[in-house]
Structures are given as C-alpha cells and as structure tokens.
Length: 213
Image (cartoon, rainbow, N blue to C red; front, side, top):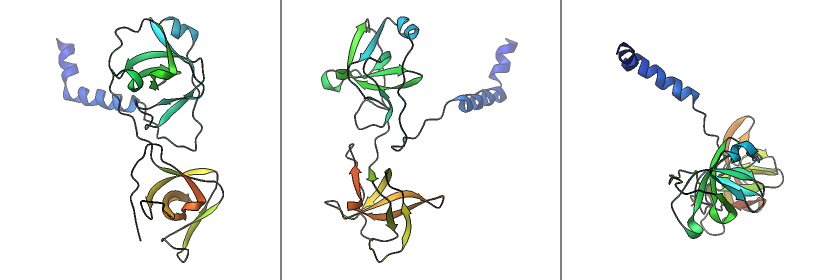
C-alpha cells in the first residue's frame, strides 16, 4: 500500500512522464536529398513469427502511412521479410500492412508482398502518415530572387542536384516562377526561381499557393 501511495504522488507521476518523453525517439523529418536506408530482419526474428510478409518487387517504398501520398521512411529490396504489426482493414488495391523491419516501422501495399504463415488475428491499425510536400529538383546552380522578376535582388545562388521545398507559385496553371525554401549563407530563406530551372515533384497532388508579388 505504501509503495502504491508513493507512485501516485504527483511528483513521481510528473517525473515518470518526463522520463517517458525524453526516452521516446523523435520522429525523423523527411528530406528528399538524403538516401533512405535499406533495412532487413534477421532470420531469427522472422522464425519467431506465426506469419510474415515477403517483398515481391524491388525498391519498394516503406511509407509512413497507408497511401502512396505519404513520405517514405525506407526502401525495401525484393525478398525482404517483414514482421507484421497490423493492417488498415481494407481490401483489394486499398489494403496496406503495417510492418517492422530493421528497427523501422511503416506501411507496405498488399499487392507488393506475399503472405507466408498465419496472419489471422492481425489487428487493425490507424495510419497517421505525413503527406509528401511539393519539391523542386534543380539540376545546376541557380539564382533565387527576392521578387517575381529578374530585376529583383538575387538572394543567393542555390546548389544544383538537390530538391527544394516549394512554398508558392506564380500562377496555378503552367507557372513561370516557384518560390522555394533554401539555405543561404547558413540561414533558411525563401526566394523565387525560374520554373524552367527545375522539375516539380508533387506526387501527392498537394495544392501549391499562388503568389503574384
């Protein structure tokens, strides 16, 4: 009884909560310029499962949610064996599995995996994946301007062979300018770049705001 009272003391409750927050791993922010890991599971881990999945395609994205619109957390080679944690409760081409592999957790689409063993009783899991943001791939060094004009001031020249977050465009249809977020002289800035300087990647079809000034 005494031990129970100590644990119920507000001081200990707050302390335990703080320890839990500190110990919890921080969610990694997706960066399209960083190469994703290619995790695997050990033979023993798979042997301990009543059922598991095998990736039946190469370079499969392990995603943060049950949609191709969500950010990838890893890339899976064909033949990779996956521990099943849950599924989204849907069927056909809307069915996704929540899996663990190499210490990472994410979602894979049912059509790209093969079921082995018994997966009956797998719980339904909620998906809260992060939607892919629009990004502009710039191949070579390019200037970014403070306004929608070459008569504006060049903020800096951004390096090529990189993706940059797109925060606005000059018009909804066939824009001639994109406003991007970039690192200039150690500071994060936003500036305008000619649309023809890059290639827009917006596979999640996210709406990009229009700015005219």
